[in-house]
Length: 400
Image (tube, rainbow, N blue to C red; front, side):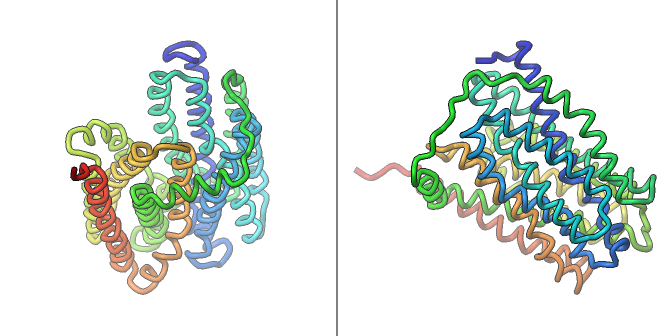
């Protein structure tokens, strides 16, 4: 088993973190481009959001498939081949001229991008000892958020500099092609992988067991619904800020996503905070901060909007860290599948949020958007209280 601080640990951790960075770099590259895409193709804000929603939907639906393929054919092989295919699709998308073709390529790209997130933790669990695994996972998760920020910031900068959304796909694709060989070279060959032979009905039984567990289903719903409003509020705010009186160009819209950095801070302190106040209480605090951040948007100045997003990002990632850790703490078997189901709900929320928030945006603009956000957060706050009661009931000793 690979030990923390060893040469192989450094190589594997860097390879998986860099691979994860490339996944989210490619996934979120269209986020600041939505107003530009709407203008270029003469389509609505809802249709342009398909370039992001289609990609996250493809990722969500392919997570379980990629996890099963990795069980059969090996983690390393699945991670590298799917990532290579996803990078190639960014380069192909740079030459597309029809919106329908672009959306189709993004859906396929999302399916390929699922390969690494679905299998990276399983690779670490098989190759690293416990101490090495805990240390590597923290670095890996930080790379996720940095990749998401970089994809949005670079996507906006490239589109703004060259006044073309094609430049974003080409630039991100070239950067990814240059970094991908480093992932291949650094990632050690697996030593402890044993191919899993599928048993008839095994997956169905495991899925049924997890989906009948209220402690897991509640966490899945909270993660998905929170991400539904959190991610897609940025999508509609790019339309607000690209119009008068703000009239921000794409490169400045990309900078909007630097507010995610407050979430990186929240993730890093969530473990210590949960130990002090309890995961259930901290989950509710995160949701309350998201609601406060949404209300700050009603100030309708750039300062209030940025402040609201900083508060919302901190709250969202605090709640996300608690919900994902909750899943790991309340599952007794098929842990990888339970975590994959959380990610499925998480990215399905990202895909569906644009459709949910669109009527609020169309009828009420920013106040309508905030109303849609707050309604969902009332639901997730109620779910967090319900989860706490479910846990208390389950932990209550039986009367003798």
